[in-house]
Image (spheres, one colour):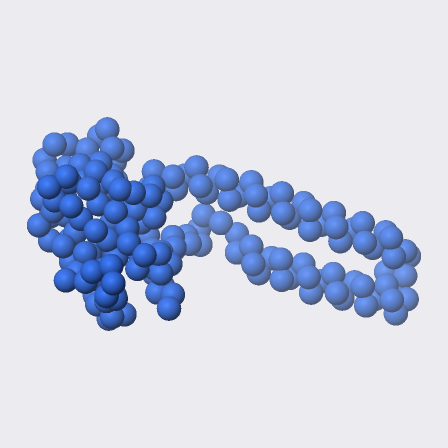
Amino acid sequence: MATESTHASREEVFDAVKNLRRRYVLYYLQRYGGPVELGELAEQIAAWENDATVSEVSPGQRKSVYSALHQTHLPKLEAAGVLRYDPDRSLVKSTEEAAKLDLQLASDPQTSVQWHRLYLGLAVVSLLVLASVWAGLYPFSALTGVQYALLVISVFGVTALLHTHDLRRWRRRANDAAPDFILEVND
């Protein structure tokens, strides 16, 4: 079993987080901090697994997740050194090793515009328009430098507002949804 002073190998960590339920544990600890009571953790994971809210989780669903976490998943994550589990107090908390895990929500391409590509495209178009203004090519020669700057700032500003609105809308939809993950280990 790994302790605070010993570090699990990269393979041990990846083996421990192969299981979705274990990734849910780490995500919950990252999102809400710790220490967390095992019952609270079990309720939220049962909700995610059953596509329900915490209040909709049945006692049987909660008990099933609670037992599996207690008997299997938390000991495995503790052995990998990414959390500490105190079964006597039913408390779970992250370790420093867990801070090295970069647990990110996977993006859902149907819920959002690919904003990085849009910004890159805007930058390329802005550069081409600037080159055309500088070279005096028609119809861009009609723009002064200040007008060009105002146009570029306005386009990027409107795009940033749309991006912010889209991000907020996505977060509202995803707030109670079960997370889907990308995991990276930072050395």
